[in-house]
Length: 286
Image (cartoon, rainbow, N blue to C red; front, side, top):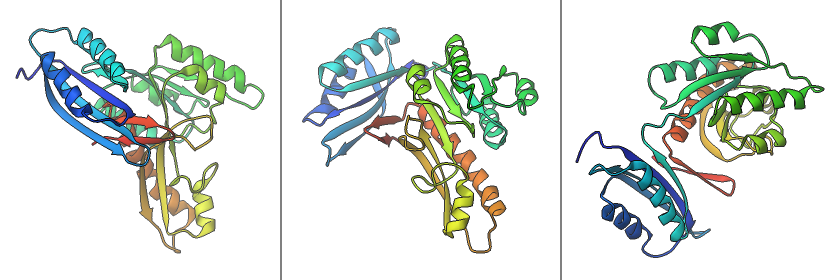
């Protein structure tokens, strides 16, 4: 096997049926591919089959043509099929307000080579992170948002995202609710970090809510944003123990570390094409 051969990653989902694994592996073999990794899952209650398969394209074949052909093959066996080609680095935009812990963590991981993407744009409703963003070498767009100007501001944001060919948006503690119109129009995945263990304490000030309720665990949740606030498909979660001695400030401090790692994990798994969404849930492959 050629170690630097281009690779294809495919994600398949659909009604479970006999022989699916065999059909997929046979197609790859017959078309000169060499499987590097394969994993599958079956939801016995829903009768849905899920698979992630990665293979090397050898023998000088066109990786683009093979990807297109496999997508057609997936459709022919009744599977919803997503295909990605190794080496493609999608353009990413970060939306942020004033809190900077997730913002810096994402940028530093990206600069360290942890994320196979191009962070091409930062959008914020405040100018707080303008200088540091530009010091990182990333264009910064300040678009103020008020209740009265929200639709106009979102129109400007959507125009910028389209102009920059953005394929993924990350809400790194962007403290504004994206409207259903925005989410429908963008047509691209949006990953949000919520500073609670959803579905508990959705909405504003979850650490204050948790402290008032006297819970013994707090958490962070990374999920895909949908029109229903904080109700989108969950990608990754983390929790930390707390006690009656912890103040709200303690909860916020502990929560920041969880938020950073939870969001980074979700972004990594998305960029590595490890997530399948169905209904309002996800299958996240190792």
